[in-house]
Length: 107
Ligand code: FES
Image (spheres, rainbow, N blue to C red):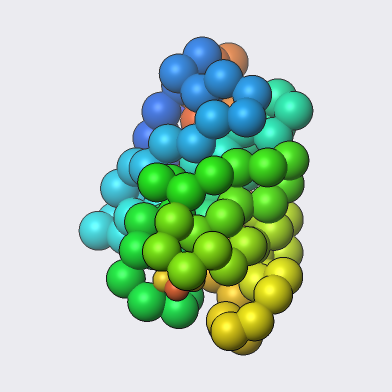
């Protein structure tokens, strides 16, 4: 049984290692990224302007925004290069069997 505040959003088998998928959680667009078999969840919308990070590239733990090329690390959500200084939110993730559940953002 899922912990309160966690919502099933997808299945692990839908996202291969190195792939990303956008889902909606409580009216927020959330990006799921499979990094070496570990599922991470972060904001899908870039903190710089309106761009969907899931349309960018995933290189290891780093997501490159498709619009201006800023790279964010999926673990802390921090941008790695200017001009962006604001981090994207990182969400808690639980795996139950093949189910991916996303919870509140880490603050
Ligand atoms: S919109 Fe993502 S880097 Fe500018």
